[in-house]
Length: 443
Ligand SMILES: Nc1nc2c(c(=O)[nH]1)N[C@H]1C(S)=C(S)[C@@H](COP(=O)(O)O)O[C@H]1N2
Ligand SMILES: [Mo]
Image 1 (cartoon, protein in one colour):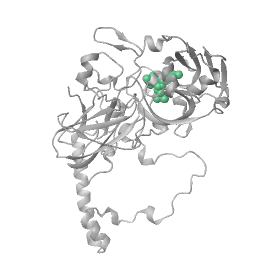
Image 2 (tube, helix red, strand yellow):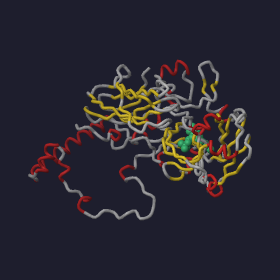
Image 3 (cartoon, protein in one colour):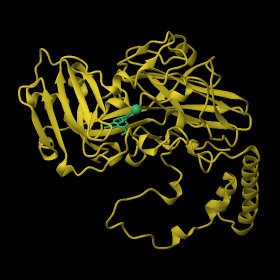
């Protein structure tokens, strides 16, 4: 079989888990089809095209389809463009049974079907504590208060008159990959790593906004951000990080934020866990100590092996995952594959990504695709020839601080097994002789 460009689409439907019998039927059917069509075409046409198609072993190219003969659709003169009807399977999905109500739930991004580093807005993961709202921007306000010279209330119009910046950053929920602390429990990369997205955000820097209100530089050491939804989500940010690259954003991927992602205003806290990216942002307060809100003292704490709770761990450490081939996909035949995935670090740029096909015994360095930006997803690719035998695919990222993504056993030695948040361990995908790829843990 020839190298497959669409390693991400090895099955017709990444979410359809075909059993071994079904896979065999698909493979056999494909061979039968090729043989039949091949003979028919070779008999009917004796042109250079037929000869080339014969050599290439794929006579389907000889049939001139409808779309090469007729008139296509007119322009979509008015309206919002949608993906092809053949891409219907590419969807955010909720993990069944994960939470009791949809308003306090998660929908995961389909990482196995995405290319490059940008998450399309309609596929950005969602996490709400108390449901989402589509807030009228003309009625939305942002108040900046606390240890500032002049407290201010901004309308969206006020904010959009300030100097704007655009930056590409990943957002990862602190609970991403949470289900892997114990044992393997979910089948696909969508559910293991799909609380991860990466977009271009446009807004005003927090530094600009705080300067506009004249904040107290000596005592104003912390910033509180509060959302306008019923959960009153509130998180403390250190002034250092707020001033470094914090942003109050209204746009995502070139258009206004989607309602699910905080329309019309959200905090962008690069490198920091998703919960601090407060959506429907309504208030910023400058203070001299952390607030210790429910969202940082009771929730989003890490249970350590000795029973203590670790608070205020906010940076998303260096991590990576192979998105294709990944759990739930099938390799249809041995031979060449492009192994691809994503790497990121909350501390800066990704420096290197290594890939192993034998469960971590041997590593090769992957190609890192540009752009490589700080606190942004980085795409990697590496050639792989599958010999048809069992294999275990893993990726290991190293960031510009020299930090190396740990194995799950290294992480457990420090953190135990009862954590929820901040699991950045190396992910393993097992390739069986049948070609079936599944989630596995290698210690
Ligand atoms: N106001 C508000 N902000 C919020 C939340 C929320 O429920 N309400 N959820 C937080 C959590 S836990 C995460 S992981 C991110 C998710 O952002 P997204 O839904 O745009 O992916 O938003 C954060 N900001
Ligand atoms: Mo989160």
